[in-house]
Every structure is written in C-alpha cells, then in structure tokens.
Image 1: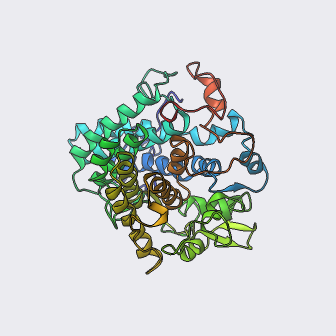
Image 2 (image 1 turned 180 degrees about the horizontal axis):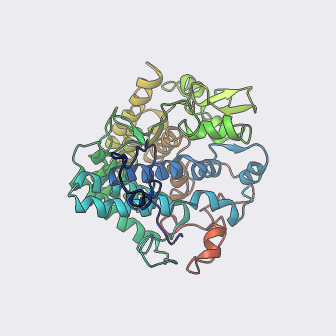
Image 3 (image 1 turned 135 degrees about the vertical axis):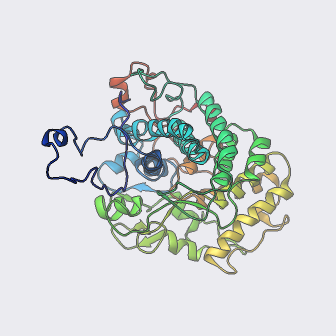
Length: 447
C-alpha cells in the first residue's frame, strides 16, 4: 500500500499553463511558476485513470491467472507452465496488486470527494461503481482485503477487512450510485458499448449477491441489470500499443506462446471432436469455436487474437447481458423455479444465436435431455456461463463458489486453486497482511 495517492491524467493532451503576454513582465515572476508541476487535477479527468486500473485488473494478469485456474487457458511456455501446474509463490501475484489501490481505489475516493464539492452526482456515482467493481474483483480473488482503511490519509498499513464486510460495503456503494447515475453513461472514456451506468451497477450488485447466496436479492438486482444489446466493454478501438486489447498485447505482442488453449476445458467444451463437447441437436458451436480459437499458430491451439475474441481492436466485455440472464437463470433454478430459469437460459442462447447464428442455438424445451431436471438445468446454465465469460475473472469465481459443479479437470494434485496468494510486496510492507496460507484455501464466501 502506498502512502501517497497519485493523480492520474490518462490520455490527456496538456496545453501551456500560461502565455507570455508582455516582454516587460518580471522574469522573476515567471520563474516562480513551474508548468510541469501539478498540484491538483480535474476529477472528470482523474476518473479515467481509475477506470484504466479497473480494466487492468479485470483484463490483465489477474484475469489470465484466473483463466488458467478455471481451465479456460493452459500454461504453455516458461513460467506459465508452472502456473498451469499451480506451482506459484506470493511474488507471482505482485503485478495484479501493484497499483490497484493507489491508481484505482484511491483515485475513486478522491474523485468522489471532488464530485461532492461541485455537486456532480453522476460523476460521484461513476466513481462509486468503479470502486465497487475494483474491490469486488479484488476480494473475490484474495478474500480479506483492505477496504475501510484503504487509501485513507495518514494510514500507511491498513487493516484487512473480512470478505463479507467488503461485499457489504460495495453493495452499499452500488445502491448509492444507482440513485445518482440514472440512465447516464457519462464519464466513460475507458469504456465502450451502449450501456447505462444504472444497468451496470445492478448487474455488479446481482453478481455480488449471487456470491453471497442471496438469490432473491440477486434476482431483484438483475431484473434491472444489463439489457440485451447494452453490454459494458473496456474500449480497445485503436490498433496501437497501450490502446489495443490487453489479451492481444500479451498473446501476440509481448509474450507470444506463453499461454495456450491446448488441452483446456474450454476448448474441449466447444470442440466437436471432444467427448466433453457441449454440442447437441439444438446447439451448434462451430462459429463460436472459430471466434474463440486459432489452430496451428504459435502453439497447437491459440486463443483467437486475429479477428476473434482477443483481436487487437476487440473491446473486452466487463459486464454483459449474457451474464445477467444467466445470473437470473441460476437464481431461479436454485429457488426451484425451473420454468423461469429455462426462460432466462434461452434468452442467453438467443444472444448467442444473434451473434453466431442464425439457427445455431434453438430454444430448449423442459423435456430436452440437457435441462429435463433441476440438476441438469443448473449444470447447463453454469456451463453456458463458463463458455460465455471466456477470459473473465467471474468464470473462476463461479467454479469456486459452486464447488466445481461443471467438473473442471484438475491439472495437478487433488484440488483446484481456491484463491490468489497475498503478494510478497504487500507481505513485506504491511504487517496487517494475513498469514500467507496456500493457493488452495477457500475464501470466506466460497467455502
């Protein structure tokens, strides 16, 4: 944790702070001004930096590691081979944690305070949503994390809050944000899509309540969540280093060959030649298979970084309607309303048909073998969600909270990873960091 919270000015073209208007001006007055020294920043610009930190957390190294642990990717070269075998140390988790708080949570708190002073409720709400997204992702991966004392002036070694308390705090943030943002999508320089902040906040809230097993609460939130066609993306519309898709940056530009899909459970579910594939008379995965994978490239099976899901200019889904529909489907199934659950599963399948079809994903009927009883229906819902959330942290969360209901194979030993290890950098600098534990310990809400 860093003592000083830095102001981030992301993507800003700076203009001169002053113009010399008189040759007679006292040179000593000019020398008193340092145009390169910034004492403050506009919160409308600062929020972009916090959002970029959120994108880095949910699309960068943490998402890759979560994807390997979830069986969506495989480690293919160098240290990623060890990661795929779950051979990791605390130092391997320094990068995802590194600037999460100072450039993410800390910035959100500063923006919130500044937004209040200028009475900009939408900006305040956007900062709340960003902070909640950051902390919920962090807590889902590490469990207990700093929250109540994080980035508080004068506190250099914040305490770690229980995972359940972090979730309570974040759900409160989202409720407060929903009351402020309305149907706006302002202040979203780092994002793309025709989303509204209110819908995004409701789906994030539904996700958190699902983790807490509050199925009725999750249904209520998801009912107002991200609607069809209004998905929320990290923006990658420029094919240039620093702007393009982060997975592409890793897979092709910086670490080609390190990570593959060869032998992954994700590949098996979509591969027509696999005995584990999820295809059936009403489900043709040919188009999605081609969108997700490249064969015979750097490794036997690469994630599709050329024209597919991880193309350089492919926006990365952070919160989408498929997830929202499948949260509703799962919650209805777990509360014994299979008819409603099937309705929402079919809505997610319709999204797939709109994108990859037409005619590849027909509606299931309650008499179809894949959904003919509650247990089969639940597994079909979770399998579809796993495939829909390719590359997203939430797939790893689902596997852990459901006790691996869909049967992800274990790469090494007898257990799947249960959490991220606290980074060595935090262990070295904060005496409040909990005991290290192991990679296979379950976090509080997923026990």
